[in-house]
Amino acid sequence: MPRSETEHRRWSYLIAGLLLIVLWQAISVLLNSIALPTPLTVFYAFIAGLKDDLLSHLLVSAARVGYGIVLALSLAVPLGLISYKKGADKIITPFIYLLYPIPHIVLLPLIILLFGIGDLSKVILIAIIVFFQILVTTRDAARNISTNYIYSLLSLGATDKDVYKHVVFPACLPKILTALRISIGTAIAVLFFVESFATRKGLGYLIMDSWSRMDYPDLYAAIVSMALLGFCLYVVLELVERKVCAWVYV
Amino acid sequence: MRFMIEAEGISKVYQDGTEALREVCFEVPEGESCSIIGPSGCGKTSLLFIFSGILKPTSGKALIEGKEVASPSREVALILQDYGLFPWKTVYENVSLGLELRGYGKKERQEIVLPLLDDLDLKDFANHYPKQLSGGMQQRVGFARALALNPEILVMDEPLSSLDALTRETLQNFLLALWKNKGLTMLLVTHNIEEAVFLGREIIVLSPRPGRVVKIVKNHNVGEVNYRNTEDFFDKCREVRQSIEDGAT
Ligand SMILES: Nc1ncnc2c1ncn2[C@@H]1O[C@H](COP(=O)(O)OP(=O)(O)OP(=O)(O)O)[C@@H](O)[C@H]1O
Ligand SMILES: [Mg+2]
Picture (cartoon, rainbow over the protein chains, first blue to last red):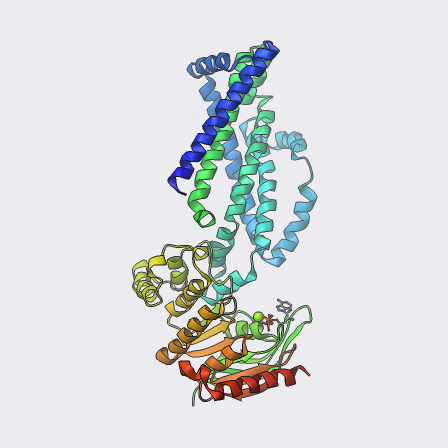
C-alpha cells in the first residue's frame, strides 16, 4: 500500500475519534446527568484506573478473548478446509445446519457443568460462538475453490498435504480473516456476558461492579477499555491480513 | 517410430452417468505435435486430464512412453487456460512450485527458474502477482511453470483462448519455436481451427459428446511461421472445418 494511503487512514481514524469525543461531550452537556459523564471526567478516571488495577482487568479480558479466538480458529479452520472435498462436506454440512442456528449462549449451563465456573468455561463459550462463524465462512470458501486450481497442482505432482498448503488454505485465508474480523465484535459481546458473573476479574466485571456502585466515570473508563481492546484486535488483524494476503491488495 | 502418447480405446463415463468419451484411439510420435479440436463438451478436457494422470479412464488405456498413466508424472506438463496460476503466489513462486513439490532445494530452484524467467521476458516481474500481469504474460508464466520441470510432453487445454488476436499469434509463434527447438511432444486442445492447423502435425477432430475420433487430418507442412499465409494452410483449415461439420451430423 502506498505511504500516502496509510497516512490517510491514520488521519481518518484520528478525525473519527475526535468527532466521537465531541459528540459525546455535546450529549453529556445536554443531558446533564451523572449517568453520562464528560469525556474528560472519564479520561481522568481512566488514568486513575491505570494507576490502580484497570490494566490487570484489561489483560485478563484480552487473554480470555485471545484464547477463545485461538481455540476457535484451531478447530474451525481445519474442519472448514476439508470441506473442499465433496465427501467430507456432505458429512459436515448437516452438523453445521443443525447446530449453527442455536443461540450458543444458551449452552452456558452445560459448559459450566462440564468445565466449571472458572476461566476455562468463559474461554470455551467465546470459542464456540466464534467457532461457528469461522467454520461456516471457511467451509463456503473451501467449497467454492475452482477444481482447476486443484487439478493444476495435482498435475505438478502434489500430494494431499500440498493441496492444503498451496491451494486450499491460501485460497480461503482472506475469507477466514474477514470472518475473524466480524467475529471480534461478537467475541467482545460474549466476553462482557461471561464476565458479568462468577468472576472478580476482567472488564465485564469492572463494568458491572462500577455500575452497581453507581461510579459512572469508572463505568465508562471500563467501557472505553473494552472498545480499545476491540480496536486493537481489529488493527492487529488488519496488519496480519495485509501481510499474509498481500496478493489481494496489489 | 516411437510413440510418446497413445490412446487405446479410451472411454470415460462420469459417476453421474455422463458419457464424455467413447473409444478414442490415436497416437503421437516422439517430438511431434498434435491438435485436438471438437465441439464444446465433447470431452477434450477430460482426455487431457486422463493423460495428465488426474483422471482415470472408465475403459481403455492412456499410455505415455508405452507405460500406462497411473499418476501425474514429471514428463507430462499440463497447461490450463485460466486458473492454472495461483493468484496468491508471485510469478517466481508459481514457476518454482513444481520444482518445490518435487523436492528441489531453494538454490536449485533458483538456478532453474531465474534463467527461465529471463528466457520468457519475465525477469522484471518475478515478484509480481499474476493479476498484475497482462493475459499474455500470465500465460507465459504458465508456460514457464510447465517448462521448469523440463518435461518431454506438453499437454495444453486451450492455453491461448482468452487472449486477444495479436497476443495470441505471438504466443502461437512462441509455441511453434518451443516445439521445434526443444523437441517436445505436444498435445494441444483448441477451439480455433487456424490455431489447430498452425500448430498440429496432426489434427484430431472429435465428434459431439460422447467424443469419438471423426477424422485425423495430416498436416505435413506445419512448422514455419509463414505457413499461416500459404494456400495449403487455408486448404487444411477448410478440411478441418468440413470434418467438424461432418462429425456433428
Ligand atoms: N466431474 C464431472 N462429473 C460429471 N460430468 C462431467 C464432469 N466433468 C465434465 N463432465 C461432463 O463431461 C463432458 C465433457 O466435459 P469436458 O470438460 O471434458 O469437455 P470439453 O470438450 O473440454 O468442453 P469445452 O470445450 O467446453 O471445454 C461434458 O458434458 C461435461 O459436462
Ligand atoms: Mg474443456
